[in-house]
Length: 321
Image (cartoon, rainbow, N blue to C red):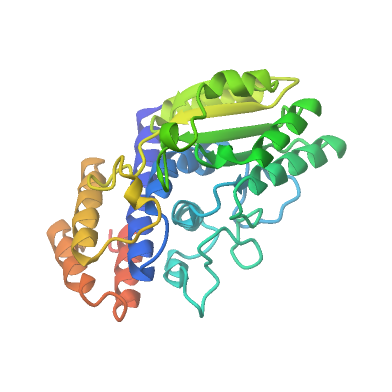
C-alpha cells in the first residue's frame, strides 16, 4: 500500500476517534471503548475496501456492512459522515431525544446504515441473510459484518455461523474485534471463547488472523477473504479497547461510559496530537488555539455543543487552506 494511502487512512481514523469522543461526551452517554478499538477496521472498510457510493446509499449493487455490535455507533457514525453520507454536523444529534442519531445503529433515519442493530448476535444473522439473498439473486455484492468478542458468547452467533457455512457464503466476511474485554471484565474470565480460530474453522469458516490497527494488513486480509471460494471468511482482528486515548486503553470500565470534562480535555488533546503527528496542518486555525478552544468549551459543553461541532467540522474539512 502506498505511503499516501496509509497516511490518508490514519488521518481518517484519527478524525473518527476525535468525533467519537466528542459525541459521547456531549451526549454524556455512549460506548467509547469498543468504538475506538474498531475505528481502524471501519476506516479500512469504508475508505479502501467496500464498493459504495455515498450519493447512492440504497444502490442495490452496493457492498453491505452490518454493525453486529450495534452499540458502537461512535465508530460507525463518524466514519459514515467522513465518507460523505451526511454532514459531520449531524453528529450533534447523537443520543438526543430531538434527533435521529440513536445510540445503536438505526437504518431508518441514518443514511449509510444497512441494518438496525443492538441486540447482540442479531446483526451477524442479518448479514447472513443479506449474503444468502445476494447468492440467490446472482448478485456480485459482498457483505461485511463486525462483531465483538464479548458478543460471540451469544448462541445466535453460532447458529448464523452454521448457516453461513451450509450455504457456502463466500460473499460474506465477518470481523471479530478481539480486544479481550467486555462490560464485566476480561472475556477470558467472563466466558472464555478462545481458541476462536479453531472454533470458527470447525464451523466451516476460512479464518484469517490480523492486527486490527494495521491498515495494510487489514486491506490484505480483506483481499484474501474476497479471493476465498466456497465458504465464508472471518477476520480475527486483534485490537486494543479504547485505542488512542491512554486512560481508556485496556480498561473495561470504558465499555459504556462517557468521559467527564477533564477526561474529555485530556482525550481530545491526545487525539489532536495524533492528527498532528500524522502530518496534518490546518490553515487559519492554529493547533494550540484549537486545543484551548476545546478546553474552554468543555465546562459548558451542552450549551456550546453547536459551537464545538462547528469548529471540529471546520477543522476536519480543512476550511481556510
